[in-house]
Image (tube, rainbow, N blue to C red):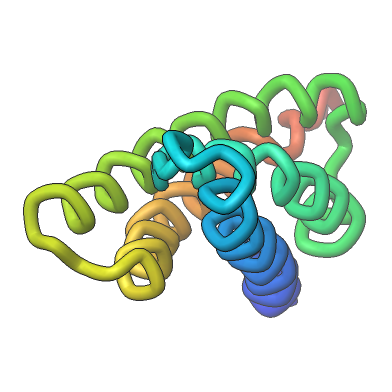
Amino acid sequence: MSGIWFFGVAAAAGLTHLIVYFSLEWILPKLFPASNIPEFYNFLAFCVAFSVSFWGHRNLSFKDTTTSVGESLGRFVGVSLAGFICNEIVFSLLIRFFNWPSWLALPAGFAVAGAQTYLLSRYWAFHNKPSSKVL
């Protein structure tokens, strides 16, 4: 069941990310003509989507975790930053070197980073502590 919730939360965070990204891509160049920096828009959108992702995963995907909120948050920051760096590299390569439009490059970055984020979240950030029971 956690895999289904993970996908749903990831979709909600991804949709948040896309809405923020494309809003910034549309608005900021009109306000500040020299500000057309897709990687910066991607970073700002990531910052907004992070809260959707953390709280959704904490309360839905991995709700049976025994780690504290603080411990999970600290770990998830690391997981998310690793995912963002992966996303940003893929995104930047696709738009800068392969001339992909951002509407294709951003989801491609999500796909690569999403697999990495799931594995790190499942097996580290929200991983239950081993039982301290002595038999």
